[in-house]
Image 1 (spheres, rainbow, N blue to C red):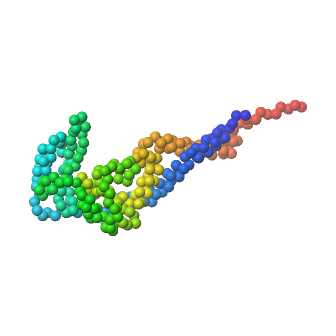
Image 2: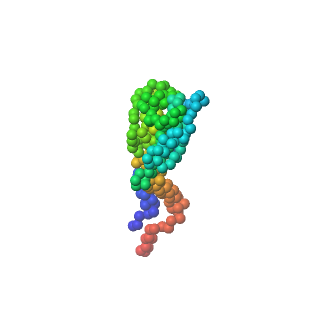
Length: 260
């Protein structure tokens, strides 16, 4: 005897439920955490002080002075940006420029220059980065450790951001770490335990186990399709199990012939 549609749908629904049930749990837990979290707290905004304003004391040289020094450097192709920033109370020009190698590949660099003299300066030292992080951090200023990062992997909490950078971790409950870009002279981000939990759940939510941020990966698309199929099979199972549907089905059993 052929197996009924009810049996096929029930089996399909059961196996799909086992296959993606764990992922459904991750999506639900992650969604609850995201919806109940304040994104400002996740980003660490309450722990950051706004950047200071530069006092109008003393004359600043024209940006053309450090730009002329850069122009004389071999391989300089073009200037992409110029900004006046505050580095520990000192006015600093942040010059972003582009160079091309012999193969025509362009690379972008940032150079700091003293805005009072026009002289180019080196990237931030460990001490300067630490003091800058302490100035921008609104919590306890006790520093636990300072790391100099030359590279990060796709799972690092400071991924896809300017390098090299100093990671200044403070001694407080949230284990806040402020990242300071050494060549840019600026604070890039702050990471805390709530953000790290958010990031881990986000990885499970997007199913991007390589870089965490790609929401167009094939695995997520496949499980989304399977999830939709699971829901539809559940509706179909309810429909074929209803008494009305069973009454409308023709009797598949053949009548017993009357032998009398």
